[in-house]
Length: 135
Image (cartoon, rainbow, N blue to C red; front, side, top):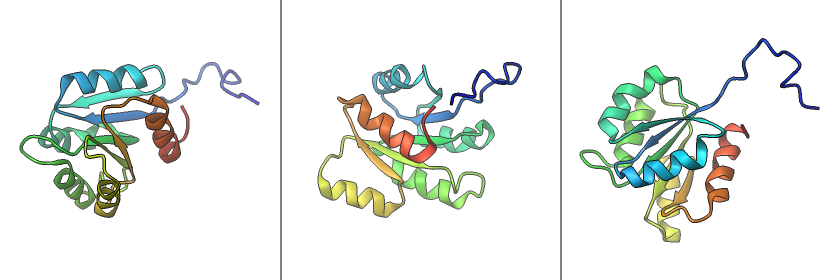
C-alpha cells in the first residue's frame, strides 16, 4: 500500500545526493539522471566538498576518483575521519574500470563502485537504491 497521500500536509522528505566531480558534463549527466528522484548537490572538487558537505545533511555521496588538488581516495579518508561524515555511504564514480580497480576502491572504504561514462543508468540507480533505498 502506498501511504504517501495518507498525510497530505506532511512533505515527503527527498534524499540528498552529493556529486563530487570536476567535469561539468559528468555533473550534468548525473544531475539529469537523478534530479527527478533526489535532491542533487554538486561540488567541483574535494576541498569544497569537505568544507560544505557537513552542513548539507546528505544521504549519499557520488565521489569521482580523479579530482584536482585531492583525489577521491584522499577525500574519502578525510570523510571517514570526520564524525559528521564518517557513516555517509560513498560510491566511487570513476573511469578506472578494471576488475582490480573495483576491488581496490572497495578495499579503500567505498561502499560501491560505478564506472564512467555512465552508459546504463540502471547501474547507478541500483547502486544508490542498495545503499539508501528507492526514492
